[in-house]
Length: 131
Image (cartoon, rainbow, N blue to C red):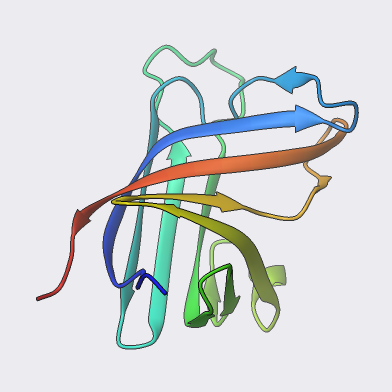
């Protein structure tokens, strides 16, 4: 099993509706984000990094953290800190596909703010690994 320990940066975000039709990238064409895993804890922060975002557009921001487990296929975090207080005390579960120094996270399909049910993927690349 690959370890997720280290620091990762967000490379790409993708989304599809319930009919597998592609949707706009949830965090824009220039996503910004980092996930850090250390000592059994994780902390993630990500947002739309597009400079030319329309004035009233939703920038798309999320952050949360807490103790995590990873079994090689599933990453589960028990949230104890979050930008959205309703997440605190809950679990964030992600399917994981490791591809060398890249990691694809797949949250469960769900409804986001306004719009259809979405299936999302977040592609991360490792920028630091502990020795």
